[in-house]
Image 1: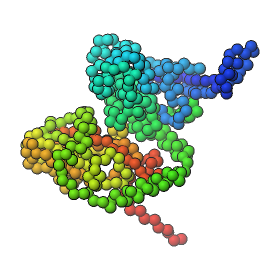
Image 2: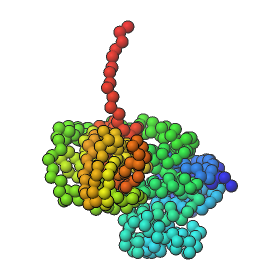
Image 3: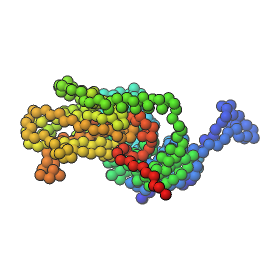
Image 4: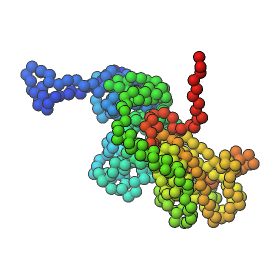
Length: 450
């Protein structure tokens, strides 16, 4: 059957009481007098999702998104209408849902696998991959009641991603994870989508919805207001958000002006003279080494020892003000002799979309020539960050060309998430939904005489 989920006139009604005593009075009233009002969390919702579709749900808080997902997963029972679900569902709705707090992480992995229909032998083959993806260390053998919210998110997503569901449902629970783990989750979701899994994805991150989903529902007051291609639904939702925004408070305005003054001061500075010592090159290496384990590839003739993001005073930073100049520093160690090494980097958003790419071919073909085994080089890229407020990944690559055109190369080291940074903006309009990159223009405005 091609249909994964089909809903017809789904309705969910809650009784609302003004006072607690009214609930008791209604229950025992001899003539069944009502003391409650009906609240429609969902009202006559109908849709059809085919196998392999990836559908986003957007809408303001209270629009009915989570209620709909809970009905689909069987957590809630509808007050009316019919629902047809064909296939095995894995859901990530609320942190810890489906976990026994007194059981260890490993025990909960097996329990969730068995609940979804897998045998013990099948879960034996999956458990190592789940543990590696969750990456919560020795806590995997501790009761989950001792877990932080981030650990819950890691384990819950890992379990649901690796039990091979037909339908994956993800609510906002991923937002509690750290940025690096969110990137891993987005990458895994894209691979599941490519493998034909039906995905329902709820997020306030409209860029993630647009980039991950073909189709989306815009929900409002318990109804589907719009069912259309994701890009169209996202634009409509953004316009709704913009229309509902208020003016900035005086305090917000003063804070943004202070940030802007600080930015102007920083832009007047130049990179301080820095003695490049082994100690300075090792700053932040613990975080880099952990990030670098994720999907790293290359023949390792030359490798990244560290990647740092620095301000113009040479200080390590993870937060960048819109318009700030920064230094992306790569520390490269050669394992063998290499005659020619090129380098580059990508800046990606949280969903893994490449927004910026550059490499040494675009900089007068700068490269490293005739390096010897054991040599260490420092590569500095200086650029101005003009990206919208958000968290970003930087992927780094070094390679050797295979021909004179430099259009094909052999990978020495590629790290999809060498580091992450957050952009903050001194100007309110730069935080509004829109494009990612600010584009410089020479602006001319002239009046034409009549």
